[in-house]
Image 1 (tube, one colour):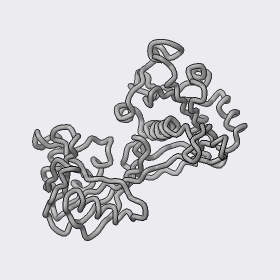
Image 2 (cartoon, rainbow, N blue to C red):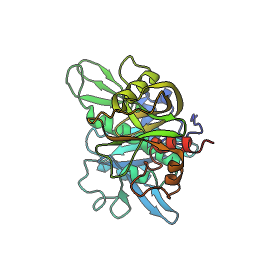
Image 3 (cartoon, rainbow, N blue to C red):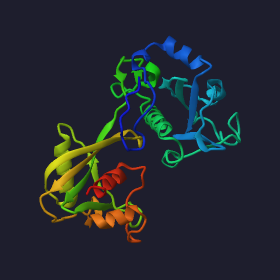
Image 4 (cartoon, rainbow, N blue to C red):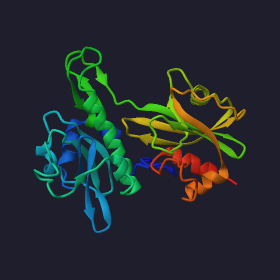
Length: 310
């Protein structure tokens, strides 16, 4: 059964039953893939296939045989899970030269960057695509054994790679990242990364380090990037982020003071912004030279949740 919660973030609330207990049964995987109710979404160069329908944009789910001949030797074929209608797989067809213009998919749709497509399809479909993209990316970058250097082979429906020489087993990794909105009374702290679009400010973020708690990482990152010390941390929500495979852990942090000392290697700028400005910005009525990340990002949900507090 799927385990879904009331999570406001894109790529959360995956509707599929992942049936992890069945993945090691290669016969079951093969039988499931051959089932006429099974659907597969092709990915080309990490972009999922999409189609236009009378209702709008839809994920380009296909019958398995439709994409089989576009897959290169050893290309990842991943079991994603199933719902009441049947099973879902993802197939990497990056070996195809130009699948939008030639072959069985020609003229049927387009391969889109997931950041764009996720905002055009239902939330559950976006979550499925995020799961698929993370796994395909992992397979593309882990084709050789980290222990002995020999080639590895996909197994367990796409959730493991095995070395044929030293027999080492390799599993997909999820990298935890803290993303936090520091607050002080009626103000929140936002920063501009050096590569951000002009005018965009966001919550600060950073990777957890080995042996570090979430609270410790929040405190360290805020102090390292902005010189802000905090006295408490509270949890908001998490977001799977498939670039390549991160788990964004959203938090609020109460600051001890509003003093800022920006690390110019990390940030171009940081500032405290009052609640009225944030509310106006979210309503599309804020300053023209100031904006926050779109709804796709958990940073947007953190800012929105804080701004809506009385």
